[in-house]
Length: 212
Image 1 (cartoon, rainbow, N blue to C red):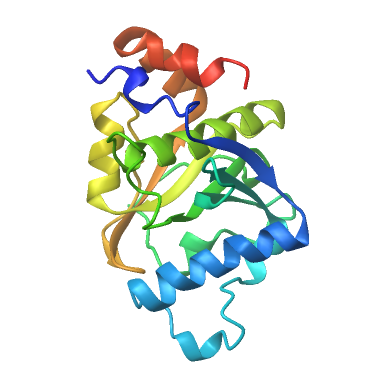
Image 2 (cartoon, helix red, strand yellow; image 1 turned 120 degrees about the vertical axis):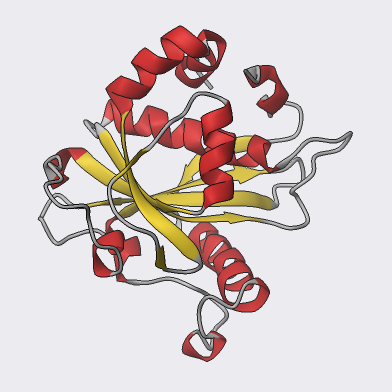
């Protein structure tokens, strides 16, 4: 099992919740670069200002990691649904028959995970897991503090495998679809995550719970 020290970012990364308009523009610019230019999941002409954002951002919390030069290394958003308007994955993904889902008031969808290609390898080596776990750690602590008990996510296999190797296992709730690449919908109960990590990777759980 991978030890979380392999992902400790203190020497080159810092993380925070991003809510100021100027900083959010930096996130949207990175998302445009990745989703429109690099991977061509979205049509660039729909975003003439070079900023990728949608209606879900108005009810999301954005979490970002910054390198030692304060460049955005990566970010992720947690879409909230207190009013019962639905989550992004529901527009694209079907569910397995008989799925019993939690109330949307205690759930959020993890989406728009992006990594800056110039920051994907930290000085001295490393991997994308450093940035991903850093923003997930910030999102995890926010969720616990604000009554979010479940995460939805439409995930690709490589990310799912990376999470599984460190003990973070999502429950698949529907078939695979082509939704910004081949993905399937998943659900993670945070209390179940804590119980599992306590058994298979307690060091990672301590790191997730530790203060910034």
